[in-house]
Image (cartoon, rainbow, N blue to C red; front, top):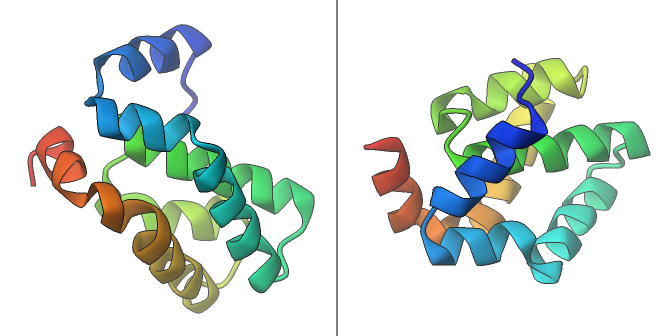
Length: 106
């Protein structure tokens, strides 16, 4: 599902401050780059991982769809997407887990 820049900007203004900081953080970008390198992703795959991670953090993609979406968007086997998803969950989502739960009403 494609989201307009307007949709993304609106959601960014609405999310809790800790999520907004995490989304725009240099540390988050560096962590995602490290995950991409560790899993030997190509630059286009890394871009898709950044996008899909951001969509979850904005509330535009439900966390339960994250693994399936990265498998599809990165054109990877489900097992590889699961490995990447575990790393993203641990390094990116875990620090803001409570805000993500509230955002997605989990």
